[in-house]
Image (tube, each protein chain N blue to C red):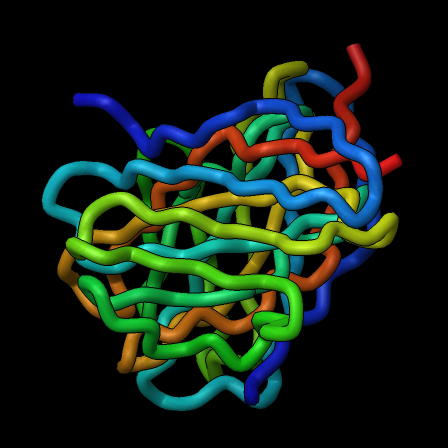
Length: 110
Length: 115
């Protein structure tokens, strides 16, 4: 099964952009890359997903490497409310979700 | 529209006691997941349902854990008997049609403490 690798933690200053990396070197051609985040004492919530092209939505942007072996979640202006654990996961054709892994704990400093 | 509803939010029991968690997914969502999340770790899949069929239960410890989704709507996860190591948050998620592009919606989780 394809797995994802993320740094354990990252720090950012408020109002600055944040780039959260994810490696998925064994990704299959039809696996979608999904990002979720989990605020304290809550269930994970969807952030963004993509296949090959970069994606933008109101929450974030997703930059996908040309070889699809890595991706980067971009928060354009971090706020204190963005402090959370961010998970990068892959979902295959059958809708099977691969393991979440440990995610990246993002700390935002005022 | 109501999100994924789980109950209870918190449960404290003594070891060897039984416990059950209930999940009501978003209306129309055929796929339902149960996850276990230990402190400081990511969620781990326990079981996935497509309607009333358990299509992936390979990670469910079947000696003490059981789950059901009889009518393909709400679901119950049971532990009997509970052990100290079962203390964790149990998350339920649902997903509508869309295969690998569909967004997952999670409930707030049920936090279990086994004493």
